[in-house]
Length: 491
Image 1 (cartoon, one colour):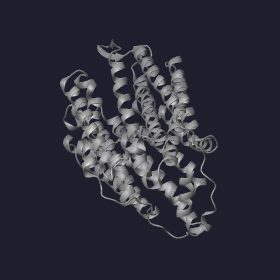
Image 2 (cartoon, one colour):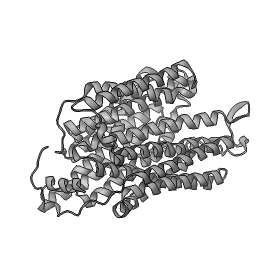
Image 3 (cartoon, helix red, strand yellow):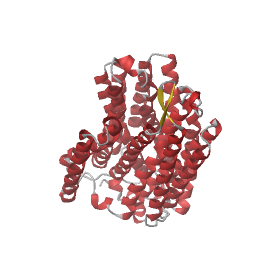
Image 4 (tube, helix red, strand yellow):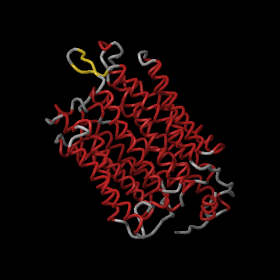
């Protein structure tokens, strides 16, 4: 590991002022990029001359690529430099946006959206940079803010994309995100210093290919099960292949000298239970966005729907994004005083309370917004605590890869949530104007399922072995970074 000398306090302060906002910008941009395609989905079959099934791959391709690349790029960041890999991920996202802006061919659009999936690694890489660059007393708040950027960007992206699509050519949206992406790459290269914390070694190519194949089989089966049929031969074959491939991958990881994912670390209770909690929290959180958007857009003829437009729907979700920004400092304070385990459990409990509000009343707009905002508040607490748990449980040179696995578990949870919610709503429909529309009972069942999973996440959080705040350290100007890292790891 490189050992830099002491860094003067003025230099450190200038770096701090730029590092946190630039990394937060990257996280928000990543979430916006993943969200902007949603308002376009109903019209893209006509605009691209393709089927609705083909267009759905613009979402699936991003999900699959993100799931595969997040742990891979996290490991690459630990080995080759986190800033370098972060800038590369943002560059791939920007290239994908440019391709979307230039083409209407569905094959090109799907490939471009797969490139944009690389941006899923932005948050774990950024959190690892924050650990390396910030003193412990500032680290908690910055990590909480970074974790919240996912919800903030999603809340901003939907109404922004809806406005652009409604009043301009749909390619304009991708030209806008291309410009924002280019700004992000330049900002990271110019304002974020490269972390000296490395874990040298040979990159595990076999492990990378095995993980990619296993995750593609698993997530493809989960995401397409509702469309292809859960009992169909392709879906069952994908699940069987995922089990076999991931079992072989697990064996390889245990026996290789430099594994892609350190499974011995993952099986430690503090790390493994944090990953389980991340999966369950991802499931519970994602149902909120999925169901709220459909519920408020349902026609008034259903008896419960509000018939809102895409733009109005996005504005309904906006208070949740603002709440995530406001509550991220509170999450950091709770983690500093009570520990991130308690913050995570509290967040999961608040998510369950939010779904209780949704079950109590999903007809009045203000109650819908209130329930969705409560869920967003709980998500802020939970998502802000997860990376802090990982940072306290793993060595400094493995933080990017460990956080990458944690984000991967959230992604798997979100994919499972999407499949489960779709299955519930499909089995509870009624005909409105000759078209099948989910019933209110179906939505309430989806809320109940998500709330129950949130309670499981709370239980998983409370099962994590207790943690304690990091030790107090000397001022930055008087102590080399290597000593501060040792003090942090000792905690």
